[in-house]
Length: 458
Image (cartoon, rainbow, N blue to C red; front, side, top):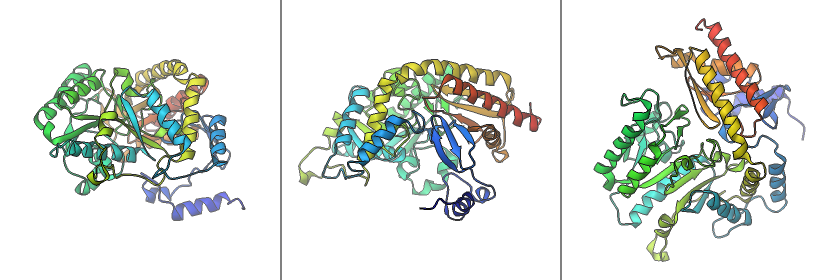
């Protein structure tokens, strides 16, 4: 097959590709960067320019690109079979991975349901929680409680429990009904007008009041532990998650944790809920599960939930949900190889020094630039919020695209970033070296400085 020239690729892209979360009218005005290769934490475009992958190729790459152990696992599975259905059959990688996941998850999470992306993992969890309550004869428990500013994906159920208006409001008329919103503690401008430490207690109390008054209508509470990712990389105060878990137990409401972004070491522990020793009833995982190689997701539930679905064929207690690529053996084989690397390369142990350095550089950013309103982080994931002036916290207008301007400046210096509005997202592969992390943070500082100077806002 003949290689397609770069000019033709650009033409094909602009004529036929519809990119996600992209205003295509603007996209076709510029020449796109075409990523052709990757190695370690670097990506290389068709012009031969290399960039640090500062967002882990949309938050999923863990071990870097072209990791030999993952490449080998994929090839070995391809030599056997690339896909077989899990409907009526099983396969070795899917069964083995389920056991490995149960071993590393908080005790009590024991039943693994496969899907293929974060949104579907959440859809599975919502349907599972709803049907569980029906089987428990709690027919009135049909709704959910989620947080303001939450993001759980882009399918209809996931959007219904989301709270980011720019992503979700357009589709509100077709959402499922019955979602109650609780104040989000993931903020530095607290909705309740409180200091950050007070916020954890007050917001958790508010959620408990909702459960007190509405628990007979609520199937489950869903939230992202520690940090709201797509909501703006906004961190929660310590103690909030534990108090919510206690409230859920008090009112016998299921707790669903969306760890699609935070799972597999991003926060410094394998799972974010482990920081507060919380075990949910259901956990949703995706992104880093295969090290960023293959689409795969899991929804893992407790025995209690699983057993509510057991019955005779005539009872119609079956969980009627599935996907073509459920338990795809190729993806599961790569996920197994990825989990092996956590042990052989001592990833979580080696991560702690990087997290400490990362936090110090974020503090330096916040101190040195009055355009940095706050630099928030959890482990090796961070959001640098750009404001017109730190003292007044006056934001840049959305259409000024300040976040994008800084990202474009960073790209010109060899770093790929993608903002959430005026929040710079920094989420490199966990495998990044200290030298590469220093290089990344130097570029971030330079890019903010360049744009601040050009706009005369320094």
